[in-house]
Image 1 (cartoon, rainbow, N blue to C red):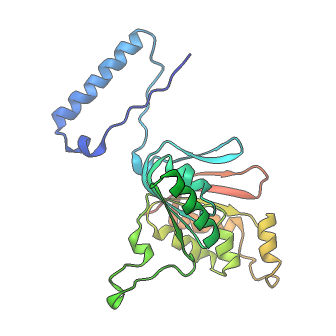
Image 2 (spheres, rainbow, N blue to C red):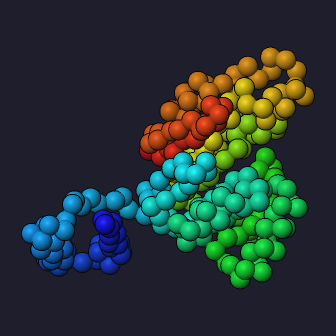
Image 3 (spheres, rainbow, N blue to C red):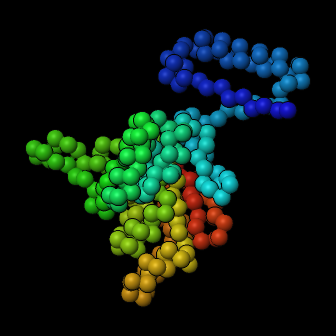
Length: 246
């Protein structure tokens, strides 16, 4: 039987240590590695990325999964019933779940309240017309976009609703995703997907000819460094994990 052991370093504490103490701590770790290695109990060791880069996309049991947390704040745009917000909450300190459907958000709120959970905040909001600044000179309460700075933004099954359903130009959608400042996990639903077909059925022919995966890839590459991408079973949906470019 083999085991994987994960060791975590408290970043703030580690950064506050002087070089001598840091080296002493690392030497102690390496010394114990040698003990395990001599006993034949050490197969290898690798350093993982820090908390801001600690979300990994995987496809497991026919579901998208986030692993290798934690992140501080995750923003789930178009959260729907909160299934992925719940998944993200297992790898983050706090999740903000936003959707324009009042019924599903109300149900999610009631479920979370009955469970006594405070790590997910459900919000009803029109993503095309989000909450702006209010109060005296519009400065007492900042706009929503100024009040949340996520480490990771989820945009699953959302882009086609914005680009086709709400007539937001695809470049604007990508710029908007980049504006949140953290990494994004975004799903692009291909034109031949049944859900896109239903949206296009109500639109004039040829109006959304620029809604193509190739165009989305170019736009994403211009604003982000794509770390990973995977086309899901069925072939009509692709997930991207991307880091905004400086």
